[in-house]
Length: 268
Image 1 (cartoon, one colour):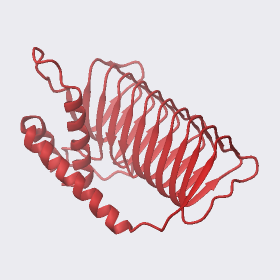
Image 2 (cartoon, rainbow, N blue to C red):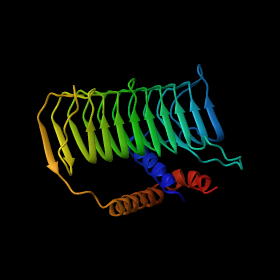
Image 3 (cartoon, one colour):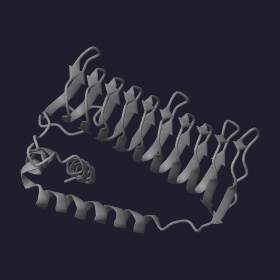
């Protein structure tokens, strides 16, 4: 099984444990869709939680609760596509969005939280709660608005939008050209603060060299720089994958009835 599949199952299992109903209300798995291309058109509405496994997914309508989405996987022998693994969300998610795949384009709105693991993540919409994102590249466009805390693990992180809460990033390269209304913790080999940067709270910078803000960048709070050595990337990748594997195996053991069907489908 691919690492991304383990990650999705782990996220789904954690959410299921966190949202366990009272004993008098037995857990009911959300509606499950296995599609080649899943599409929820503008004006369409799905009530309650929904689980989608598809090669491509386009969400333009409304989901009234949590959406669990794994893109890039299909049960059919479909032709290869340049959009395989694409998750395009331009609609309204009234709960949280848990998603994994190759590319996430979010231009719509998530009223609660976003948890995402992709190769590329592009946020140009609104998330009212917190965001946890892991990807090779994470980009927040000028229109992006994060209402809570933004936590990112990435190869490259680019911020041009607005984060109302705390910003915490670990990456090889960080480029800031947007607004952070809270505090910021930046861990990277290379950090660039462009003229459009505005951070209102304290800033902690962990990098090999001190960071000099560009032009009109505004840092209202105190700035603390902590010199660091470049991380051992192979060790970090091994530890992260090992921990994820153990978590996924544990969840598969404690909830076999819930996970056996998605596991079999992901092996196709």
